[in-house]
Structure formats: structure tokens, C-alpha cells
Amino acid sequence: MSPIDYFLPRGQVLQWHGQAGQCLQVCSGLILLEELLWVEEQLLQPRQRLGPGSCYVLHSSGWVTLTALGDAQLRLPAGLPATAPDEGWATGLVQRLRRAVEKLGRLRLGHSGMKRGASPV
Image 1 (tube, helix red, strand yellow):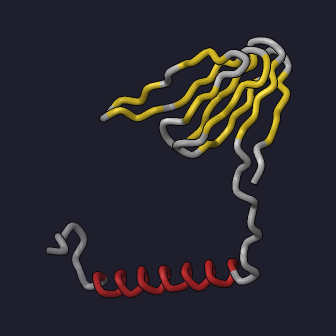
Image 2 (tube, rainbow, N blue to C red):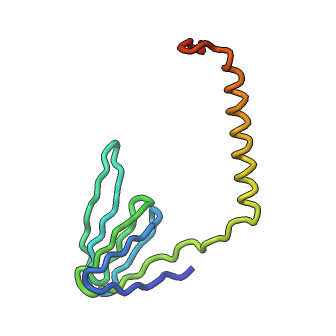
């Protein structure tokens, strides 16, 4: 799939979901990029200012915030095409819910003879 070009007027914000290793390119203008990163048990939000001709490779998959500090044009990789759900998706969901309710009912019946406050162990 070919990349998609975006024009962002000054102050406009674009939320983009990218995959690790994807590269975004600033064709013109100035962009502020904010990417969320987990490092050990800390959530970091590094900010990068990207000018014309800059390329940025995503460190991890997730949401990226792109803010135009001036009129800017950028090129982003095309996402995966949207796929239509299967026709029977609702039927499968109903069947799974029915099985879960039946299982919960059997569990309740199995514990119905217990006295109030008694431990199941």
C-alpha cells in the first residue's frame, strides 16, 4: 500500500495509530510528535520537533500525537484496510454468551447447598 499525504494547518492535531518500525516523514513545515513508550514500569511521553525532510521511526506500536506548529505536510504509511465482520459474528457471540450463562448456572447450582457465610473450601 502506498503512503498517505496529510496537510495539517497550524495548530491542528492528528492522532495516528502506528506500528513499531513504521516511518513517518515531514515533507514541509514543523511538527511536534508525541509517542507513548513503556520503559520497565514507567510510561514516558517523549516529544520530538520534526522539520522538513525529517523521518521518524516509531519505537513501539500505539497512538502517536502529531501537532502542526505551522502549516505542515506529512507522509504516513497507509494502515491496513478495514475488513467487514463475518455475517455470523452476532450468532457466534450469542452462542458464547449462552454457554457462559449455562456454566455460571451450573456453578450456582453446585454451591446452592452451602450455608450462608460458609467457606467453599
